Length: 92
Image 1 (cartoon, rainbow, N blue to C red):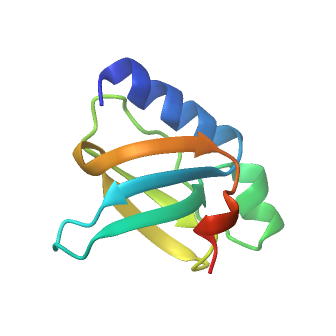
Image 2 (tube, one colour):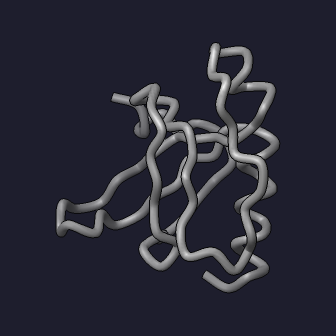
């Protein structure tokens, strides 16, 4: 992902839920993860710790995985796509 697309992804994560598709680094296949770093969504779910800043030149992002209700991270060089909102097939 280039810096512009990374910046757009970060902005979308700050504003709401984004479904990110990426390849797991351990060869574990593809992960489709609805996630967020939106302070208001985190607070509404009782999450007290948030992400204050992410630089568009970062190589990974930590985000709250909505489906797992836990913090997860993904490497930007493994992202194959992302869309705003929760995709129906993303939540098991």
